Amino acid sequence: MKAELQVAGYKLPVARQHRELRHALNFQPSTFNFQRAFTLIEMLVVISILGILAALTVPALKNLGKSNVQVSASRQILDDVARARQLAISQRTTVYMMFVPAAFWLPPLTASSAWTNSLSPAEYTNVINLLDKQLTGYAFVSLRSVGDQPGQGVPQYLSEWKLLPDGSFIATNKFYNNTFIYDYSFSPAVAYPVSQFNYTASLPFPTEANVPAGILLPYIAFNYMGQLTVDGVNLAPRDEYIPLAQGSPLYAMNSSKALQFLPATFDESPPGNSTNSMFNVIHIDRLTGRAGLLKQKVQ
Image 1 (cartoon, rainbow, N blue to C red):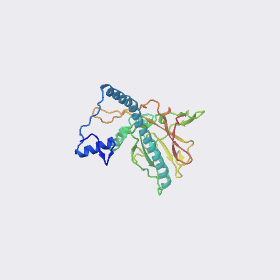
Image 2: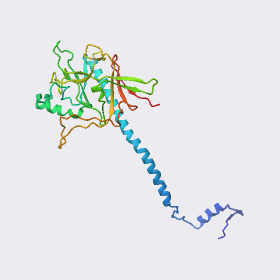
Image 3: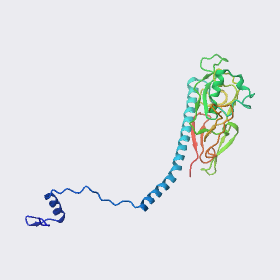
Image 4: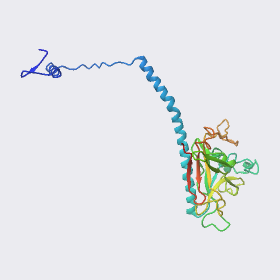
């Protein structure tokens, strides 16, 4: 067969000639696929690039996880503050959102270090269960409800003890001292006053059967109008600011992993994140009782 094909005296293009020739010979294309392989240098370059990308992205992923914890904790507190306020309005009573301070079984929060000796076995168990809720746990309680006789209120827990997400806790300065958090994204910087919680010994603890508990407990409270209050009668003199911190509280345990009556330690990770540019603060307006989240703006 000639190398060139003609149809009716017309010379076919080369590409068409090749197709016609293969068809005439029933030619099957080879199944072998010849490709150029990677060289060792090219593989090393690719591995180096992957290593650089991993070094850049792993810290970012870790920070993303921390950010998620911070967001979850903020969202939980915001939702529960709104719930406490709504309970106060719907039940026409004062609702206390009380928190678990660190070393709550020791002076100055109790009159004596032997407070735990006065508890029944069931109460003792309930207190043990609160040891891992120091600075992270809270519950709703009312001292009287609609229908109670004057001067004969019946205390009632309106929720179980709740716990903030792992890796978060309420900043220690909210429990122990007054301080300020500064937002330097404004000029001049805006100062948020973080006054310590109000404390009272009139709340039932660790159960509603213990009244008064004889232990000072930190709290915020909402009156029947949903406003912040000190005692259910008087309006709170200031807004509330609750700073949240990232970190891992360490609770004392024995060799059997049972919780012990020893103060927990609270380390912020990274240090100072409750007051520096990473701060997340829950702000509660005293007049409306509504809560919002304050976050320092990054310029």
